[in-house]
Image 1 (tube, rainbow, N blue to C red):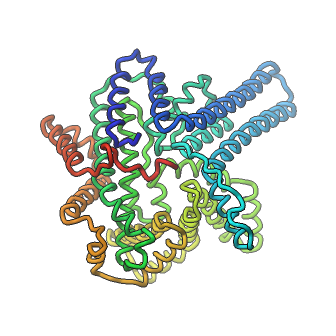
Image 2 (image 1 turned 90 degrees about the vertical axis):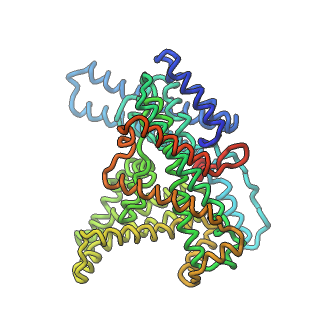
Image 3 (image 1 turned 30 degrees about the vertical axis):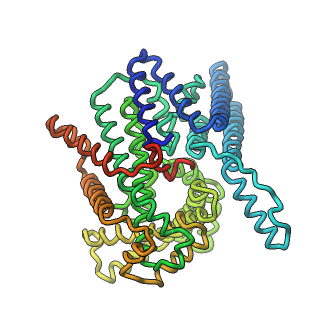
Length: 534
């Protein structure tokens, strides 16, 4: 059930009405029922994966909490416990909790790997066997179903288990409340990746009907519809044609560069539009979900971009991967060895160069089972790590060239440079294969045709005059609003303070734009979200 479908809007209307009719103490139960009803719509078999993850996560959390409570009880029972005995007890407790924590995380990762990556692994093993002269497809593919949102709820479950293991908060005693956290229907499609101590608590709180929440939530939903239906789905066919294998030999590198720009617009409007809908739906119920996008295309570096794009994934990786590796004993030992051989300055760069490689490779693999995603991760890792290592060189170059690094012109240059660098990484994701991606990148730099529009018309995938105008104006509107937000203007709050007639005229205008200019699929169902199967 796509978030932009008519079925979802009807489903949401029913849920909202019931949410504010039922006694407030039952609101969270209604959300749990609605979430599982929504998930069942995607397939009965998929629910068993979600249930399994929920039960394992709940059991693990309770076991760790029980072990920690026993430790506290033993301390209370023997206030005068000797220091050595107390330290031994603390160490034993930490070890027991760590075992449960690690076992659960490994189990979650194994399930995710088998479901999502087994066929990819089998295909590569078969390719190696064939390269060595073996029989065709020696190993059969498993063709397992990939449950909707498995990457999202698995990461949320692992974050919860790690936090309980660290003692950040107590384990949830009610399994149904944990189940709601992992299955909340607006966010299970494509995130954001929430934390239990934040969103998990908000989901079970009692909420009164609030005019501001309803209108602000509706604003955000309509803005998400605008980005998804008017922009992303309009440009999607052009992007698909440009990056199709059949068109590679026919098109110039300039046309492919244009396709890269279009895909950058498409994927941003598709993903951020879906998140806007998700956050808007939640806000209508009085629930605030974490921000997942903060105008990433205004970033002045790749590192900054990843702090603005898919913010919750980046935050998850920093909290549970980046800092644990940076502060780990092996990394400390490696830094010490480098310091002894090459000095303090070299040692300082070791963790800040190695760790991004590990993190970005994991991010690439998380996105999909394909070598393109591994290359995508490596590409970003090289850029981020290289930027850290070469930062002193860039500063010296700027000084020698007398560049005013505080000027607006320099900032605009860095924004455009970052956007183009990231555009290359998007080709790695969008191309049909890694080989085709590399060929496309080479072609962009070697095959030029400024009259690329004629190529698009010639091969029949030009949007046409009217659609070009609609798309151009829509992107311009998106840019202007994003620019205002980047400069501190709070658009939703500003609109909310307008005279009621003006305010509702703006709402209806946006609604009419979506209804008239939105691109719809069969049975009033928009195209699937790019991220929803991850």
